[in-house]
Image (cartoon, rainbow, N blue to C red; front, side, top):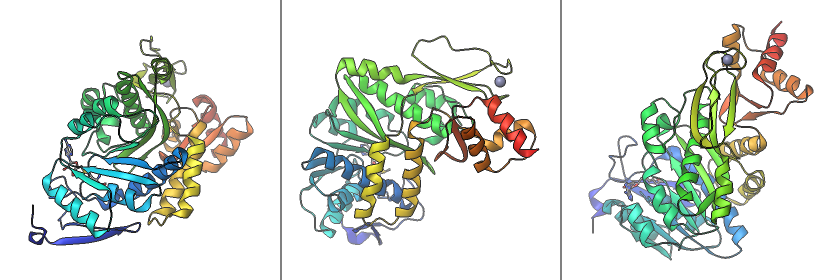
Length: 389
Ligand SMILES: C[S@@+](CC[C@H](N)C(=O)[O-])C[C@H]1O[C@@H](n2cnc3c(N)ncnc32)[C@H](O)[C@@H]1O
Ligand SMILES: [Zn+2]
């Protein structure tokens, strides 16, 4: 047992949960117990997602917080979500375990168990017992997804954080290939590509165990990406779901792009607009990455919770809801204007013109200057040029 009196304790409050951990100089994996205040919105959104998932089950749900740190997730889930039965908080660090226990007591909670195991070993030894598994590791979740695929049960909810955004976004290509077996590309929509690579890798990994994913919500925020997926089972269903895997082909010169579903497809080589060589990214998930109905329920649920980041998260959820039916990838107005060597017109005017011409056009949370539209790049350019004349 570690003596907590040996540490200078910091106390924080999120939602209506109080947590203590050793004071640190800066947020780092070297801190004795990890706590990152920047992740509060991530935790607030998780509370809404898990609550909506619990309502669908119409019974108490059991949750696993696989990488507990201070215990804040598991403790908040038990303290702030209705209909939660048993919560297990796991962490490989004994120091973290001691603070998790302390924080459970600080919040007067029962039915919360603390466990000290490697995440993969823990999942494998506890196959099929959780309704929700939250994977919030340092960096990449990739090494843990096989064990999640093996142990996760039908109709459960899997929540995944990835903080290795430089790999997923293609700043460094090789780490993405190593960790996600996918070639990234650093384009103006690379955060969206990153989320789709993470989703594609999750789908492919889980498929080995006859399981497939339905994405309820995904977002890229600051330094991390987060996925909420419902797990379904069955080989036929999984085969069908894998038809959402494919590739994006991108032209660096004129910003043309196209996406093609399929695993062993002949990728187009040359840009049909300007003849330049196309760059390929993938395999990645080309299916839906937002579920409009589920996100609407989350937005409604926010009224019932006390969350410090409510305004910020509602803005994000509303944006994710709007982009739920849009096609993969988006355009950045400033990047288009750079290729045209003109200054950018007002964003709203471009949306108006696109809609008037019968194209779908919506904003995206991935980029404040982004347009998700089914209009071809040549048409968007014509509109932008006309608006700046
Ligand atoms: C990013 S922190 C978790 C943060 C926490 N979920 C939160 O919201 O504040 C990652 C935690 O995983 C633990 N960890 C690292 N490797 C692990 C492994 N292989 N199995 C289980 N826990 C591990 C670390 O001790 C650390 O506490
Ligand atoms: Zn081109």
